[in-house]
Structure formats: C-alpha cells, structure tokens
Length: 254
Image (cartoon, helix red, strand yellow):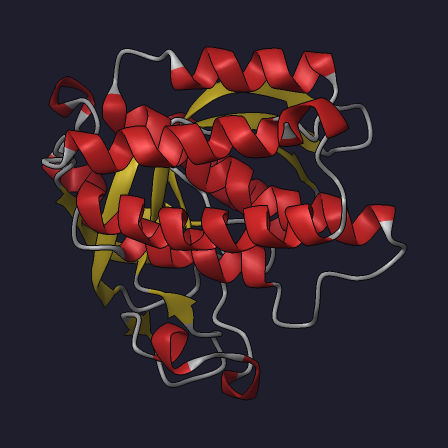
C-alpha cells in the first residue's frame, strides 16, 4: 500500500468487491473513470457506497495461447467455475466520485491506493458480483537510485517525439517527490508509446495487448527495483525503434 494510513480496514480486505476488466491494469496513483451500467456492477457500486468505498480492479487473464511464458508465470486466481480467471495481483481503489444518471447508469471514479493479492474467493451464493479476500502488498522505495535515473533519462529521450504539452506533462511526472509514484507513472506511460505508434501507423497493437502485459508484470513485480528493470528494458527497445524509424527531431541527433 502506498500510504499505510489509507490501508483499508481488515473487514474490507476480507471481502473486497472486484470489478474485473479486460483492458485496464489499475496502477497505484491512477484515477480510473468507469461508466457502470451492468446490473451486477450497479449492485457492486451500491455495496461499496454502503461499506468502505473500496473496490478492486483485477485484469482478466486472457487466453493462455496469447501469453508469453513470463506472463503465464504471473500469479493467477482461477475459481475453476463459470467465473473467469483473474490476475491474482491487482490494484485496490477508493471511490472518490459518484454520479447517478437519469437512465440508471452510474459514473464513478476510483483512486488507486496500492496493490493487493488474492488469498481466496468468497462463495457467490445469491450475490451478483464477486468478493475476494486479499492481502495488502507493501510498497518500498527503490534501492538502486542510479537505475531509476537511467530510466528517467530514457523517458525524457522518448518525450522528444511528443508535442510540447505532453513533454511538459512528462517533466511534471519525473519531478514527483515519491519515487514509487514516478515508477508507476512511467509504467502507465511507456507501454502507451507503443499504442500511440501503432495508431499513427494505422495498426492495432496486437491481440495480446503487450502494453497491458508489461503493466501487469510491473504491478506483480516483487519490488520497485524489479519494476525499474522491466521498464528500462522496454524503454530502450522503444528508443531503438523510434531512432530507426526517424521519429526523433533532427536537432536531438546532433
């Protein structure tokens, strides 16, 4: 948990409602907007509003044939029934905004507080949504400060291919006081570069959605230094591709 003062109460961790998604890795510090319309998730929102305002957002585990061995090695929670398998490590968030719409939908926003790991799933019985018992995972600063500085320099290098507004946003991220938040922000940013490049070239990023897989590996990583290593490797490969494609400004190559 990024801030232990915001650690949910034990009863919340013992029965956390989850909102599995196929296309989002809910990272600590992220603010996630959701348009809720399915009856089971409307029930989930009501449950959260009546309780501690906490919701878990796990990534649905895709077809194993789409995954690399490194992804298959990530911890998995599979209830073994009609409920789909989810990644066992995922983000927990707190409701920070809630709006009821005239047509019955809810607009909510969740703020990512930290990471949790599934211990076990509660029997579903008559409930329409899923509850899992989880344990909160600690968040420590990276030990290798030099490695983080190398990663930040790589991100600044990639930012040369962005417009000025995006470059300013990246500078703001890299100047954050909390190294843990810098790493998670980069985990959100670096894979997105691949998506942006694919969009510019009129291509899809791929059925396995590699940007999500990298983010999930970062989320499930043992510690911040492992995250830095994963991101540094991916950032360097992107810099190489950007350089080969002539994406960097001419002035930056001198």
